[in-house]
Length: 290
Image (cartoon, rainbow, N blue to C red; front, top):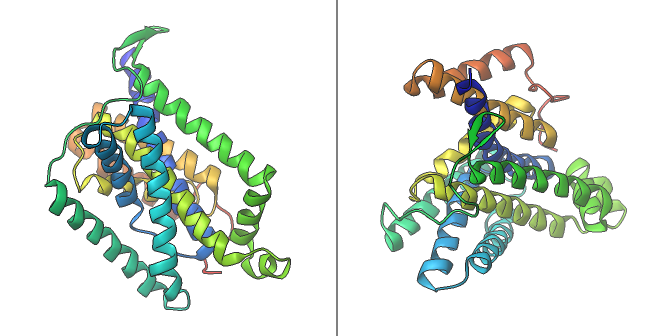
């Protein structure tokens, strides 16, 4: 019986990382109508940047992490301005292929300079397990959950309370109306891409101590995309809950069925949910490019 809550907590930990990546997918799509399939690679670059600053440049841990997140955000802005903005009026498939191409370029570039296997990054929280209410947990797992929830709450406050956040939210809801009332839509597009990339970098840094950092670790980011679809792709709360649900389902399938089946189980659940609710568990309305 004790195993079950441990599996659930572990699934929530994993799902929290999916949620951070999923939010990035959602805010970009809501604002620009673009499915950014380089989001997972931004997660990978966040871990790579932190590793570079901390080990290669000898920076303190916190400074290295903060600079990695900032650099990822700046890179996201540059990608929007230099690559995606010129494709603004291009067919949707063209833009999607551009994001896939950017993802491949990022992977190849890291392989050239760092090789296939890099290393692990020190955890932000301790890994020493302890017992809480009869369940064995680690500070890292609880820290990942707490950090993810804090970021989600902070994002909600940012979008609802700050002038910049309200402008970004207005742009994502109706870009034409936002432009009419004086909001600089191109600037908000760039900031949204930067914010999305920074969130992916946070997920990558939190994930890095749990796995070996490689150029291919960005493939985990696709789980954030799946979680966002499961929850409702146009809903930020949906992306959060969808990511967590996906992480829990994967863990339950891996422990109680077979570890090789966990991805299959997750996709089966996704297909069932979409067959019943095409817009996801918390989604409303039809998908469309604004």
